[in-house]
Structures are given as structure tokens and as C-alpha cells.
Length: 235
Ligand code: IPE
Ligand code: IPE
Ligand code: MG
Image (tube, rainbow, N blue to C red; front, side, top):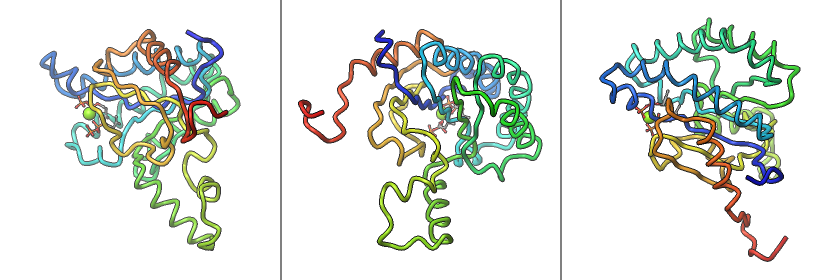
């Protein structure tokens, strides 16, 4: 591990909870219930390494189409988890933030999230961003709506003028994407922001993901040569 070459922002698609539960002949929600250890380990590993931002794909816009029982179970779990984890986040200098269509979340979830965000707002060791009721196409639609409402002119539109309208405006683009669960796709996650992100896929199901898996992903990242469209020799 090269301690001087740590990704600033790591994005994670936490996938495989349902399959993890099915393997044990349990209901899908059992897998979601066992996802917290992996979240904790990821945040701890990131903090120890000096990662500044971790964005977790927690619930997608499309996930609203799952059976009501599962959606309700996830929302309930969210409330309980935020409640139990806030002290640890405070202790570890982690700031919680949320991107996504918060208006679609149940009121109780929204209240708990806002409480945790307020309580951790002074922390700056690591920013933990939960993508909740988030999808990239929703975000881009929102950005366009806001730009039109603000009267932005066609000739003013470029990368830099679009950025302030994205939900991720305060964060650098992800350097590294980790997806567990073996699927090789983005599933509508940070499409704009991941233009030059390095991808790391693992078969591990999310409830089994541990610190050493996070470190392995960072090591793989360190072996990549990022060129951003230039030749390998150019600075
Ligand atoms: C990811 O695990 C968690 C959410 C999408 C909320 P899944 O629930 O998608 O698990 P699999 O992919 O069906 O195994
Ligand atoms: C992506 O996983 C969303 C989250 C991890 C929150 P999905 O399980 O929803 O993605 P697909 O349906 O396999 O593409
Ligand atoms: Mg899945």
C-alpha cells in the first residue's frame, strides 16, 4: 500500500444483500440487516487510509419498484441504523450527508437523517455520503430543471457551469468505484461524475465485505495508470 497515493473519493455500489440471504434460505431483508458490518468496516478502513469522501449507493430510484415489504423493511432499518450509528460517526470525525430525492423518503427517515447530519456537520475527517432515492438520470433531470429556472443561457452551458446544479457539487468526482456482488454495471449511479473513475468489481456479496476487501480495492487502484485522455508521458 502506497500511503501517499490514496483515492480521495471512493464510491461504492453495495450489492448482493438479497443473494446473501437467499444462500442461507432467509428472506431478502435478512441480508439488508447484515449489511451494517460491511458499512462500518468500509468507513473505518477509509478513515484509517485517509480517504476523504465515501459515497454509498444505499437505495436507488429504481429500488422503489421492489415489493412493498422489502422497501418498508429497508426504510425501517435505515432509521434504526442512523440512530445506533450516530455516536460512532461523531466519535470518528465522520460527517454524514445525503444525495437523492429526500422528499420521497418516509418522514421519520428524513427526520433521523437530518438530525444525524446536523449532529455531525462539524466533522471533517471523512464525509460519508448516502445516495438515497438517488439515480443519475433523476439528478441530471433535476439539474436541467434548475438551470432553466435560473435562466442559464445556452451559451453558458459547459462542464463547469453544470457542476453547481448537481447534488454532488461539494464533492470531487470519485477516483475509485467498488461494486460488490459480481454484477458489471453502474445501475444509474453517478454517471456524470464517473467519467474518469477507476472501476473495481468483486464477487464478494456486500454483507461479507470487510476492511481487507476495501484495502484490496485501493491497492488495485494504485496499480492503475490514469490518463484523462492524454498520453502516458504527458503530465
Ligand atoms: C443491494 O443488495 C441493496 C439494495 C439495492 C438496497 P440487493 O438487495 O440488490 O441484493 P441482490 O443483488 O438481490 O443480491
Ligand atoms: C444497485 O443495486 C443499487 C444499490 C446498491 C442501492 P441493484 O441491485 O438495484 O442493481 P441492479 O438492479 O442489479 O442493476
Ligand atoms: Mg442487487
